[in-house]
Image 1: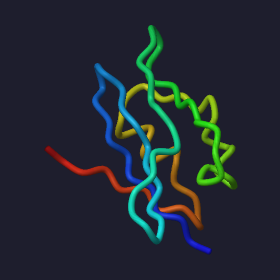
Image 2 (image 1 turned 180 degrees about the vertical axis):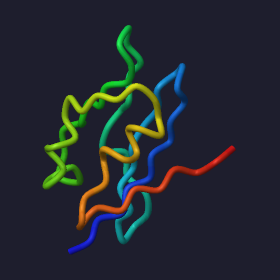
Image 3 (image 1 turned 90 degrees about the horizontal axis):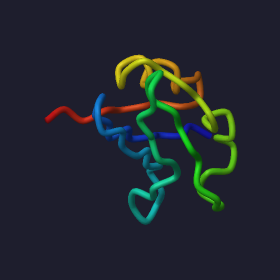
Image 4 (image 1 turned 120 degrees about the vertical axis):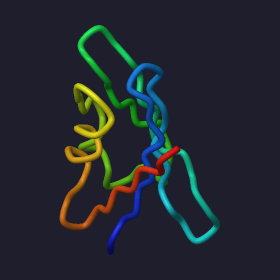
Length: 81
């Protein structure tokens, strides 16, 4: 089953990751800014199942994070603006 994630991210402020479900978008993780870049923290809950690989994922910026999040069964979109 394909998973669609929406990354709302700012290089300076961090952001959140939402998963598309039948009832709409559900936040499954936060993106925190640290001294060495961005780090993903998955929230507890059923919607994050199967996406454990995101926990602790690190990247320099939002574009790198988007690339690192993608998998063959996971599509990541990042709205502009």
